[in-house]
Image 1 (spheres, one colour):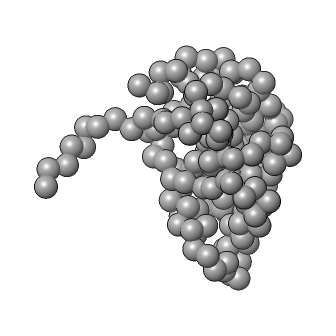
Image 2: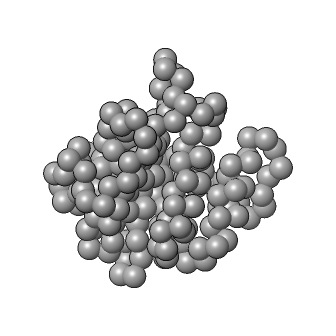
Image 3: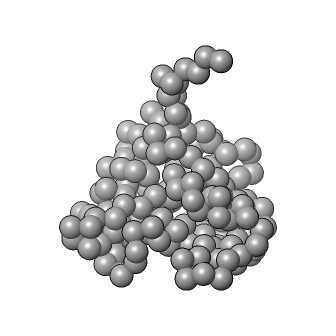
Length: 169
């Protein structure tokens, strides 16, 4: 079997009638804070709305991506979005949420909250995407350090302005 490792990972828009919500986070251990980015796009790949935040909540590094997913699910529900495909580059979250039995350990509190929130969005799901296929959100997370508060972007932010169309090669 010959596997080509040079194939680029590209972002793919969701099917008609669905919205894709890409979720990413970064933990900065030296400064003891993390940033989170959430970006939604429609089936044409067009930008809908995005959000970024910087937080110094005392969250363990492994929980940062999960907490960001929880925020994204909550935010899209509050925003009234339905049929949402949440994409994350954290395979642990996807695998955990694929398991039908919730866990009772401390480490699984936030994923279990995600599972509960997803119950209220029945046509939504969480899937895995490599970071290379989601440069928009990766850049949005890095730029969150520039803002003091939560930022909601109704228009494509300047930090990612040229990326959405280039990401879907």
